[in-house]
Length: 490
Ligand code: ADP
Ligand code: GLC
Image (cartoon, rainbow, N blue to C red):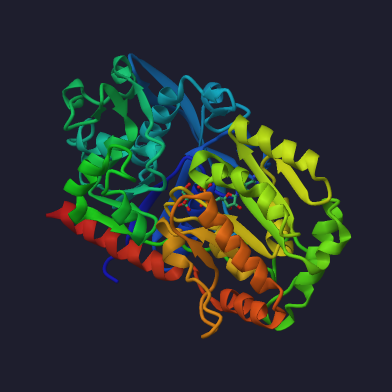
């Protein structure tokens, strides 16, 4: 690998500091792996209340950083902390913007000043690096919250010596969230008015921060090869497919990895007892623990427990789940659902839980330890997603011998191979049409197979042996960073 490479890795959530979904897992694990491969990588995120409450050891490294926002200038502090693996992480502090109960909004809706909040973070991150003398070759940003960063580099800061030759990589974790704001707020984000047109960051009369990332970044990545193809079609493109087709020469699909430091049944800090390929029997004890914890019927020890751990959003196939839930119960199984999200799904699922106590356990909320205990205790994990850029839980499930039942879309399609009882190959169950009958059909197949414990064990072992660790993908990112850096140096 060529000269040493410096990367400023900016995301709106990073595990273990702040998390609402898979972006945090990626932004926690990928930089750690890059560091191990010799990249000088630093991570930045807002100093939310959630980070404060985590009681991480921090120290203030800059006071009163001046950040222009609209027609005023805000002053904010920057704190530094270090991960267990020694990675420097910078926290951008502005109480009025980030000291709130949630990261992006409440069940009633997004925070109305999200444009101010993430414009501030994006600009502060660049200005801080300049002021602190952190020379970086590449800025790697993620999703709409950081979409302005590539735009700043190519417009506002295109002649600023420290920043003008920085290359940018923008990763799409989910095209469904586009960071749309009213056009009259353009001055707030500070991108010149001349950029507001259909070939710039205008999207049907609004400002789209996602589009800013897609247009101005030197390279775009998304989190699985399949999704990189899908998003170039009208069906999955959320109106951005045309832009993505135009940028296809600079669009890469790099599969996410699984962070086995956090997700491995042999070492998982939240489960007991531990287990692995060598002593798979202990999984049954995790299952018994889950049955007790959730007050499920004791006779489920010999019947499958089917779980879903997910944001409760249309993307995740919640409609299909709700549709088939009573038919699935008739297969004499237990169902465990952990999720938080849209009110309508939360309400329906809680009602099912109340109607069938002992058979369905529904937990509404975000509960990291419980997510791990379910992963260890369940027999199957459902992912009937309408679309899925990558999906991490199916990869975690494999490692825990919990068999994924997925819809063939995006990263789910890339990672799950249907089990073939004749050859003994494959790692899960997969269906294609977004229809309840198809979903129910594969759940039935899975439940039938479960009764044949020898064959089921083979399927579990196939999954547990698979290796989705980050290194291979991190190396692909490094090659890409080198490529975009070279492109900027010309
Ligand atoms: P997405 O980012 O679209 O939500 P991923 O599969 O990439 O989907 O990542 C989801 C992450 O969030 C996983 O780490 C999963 O365990 C976690 N997760 C989702 N819902 C919950 C919840 N209610 N409680 C705890 N963890 C959750
Ligand atoms: C998004 C996607 C999910 C992906 C995650 C991490 O939230 O919905 O599929 O795994 O980002 O990249």
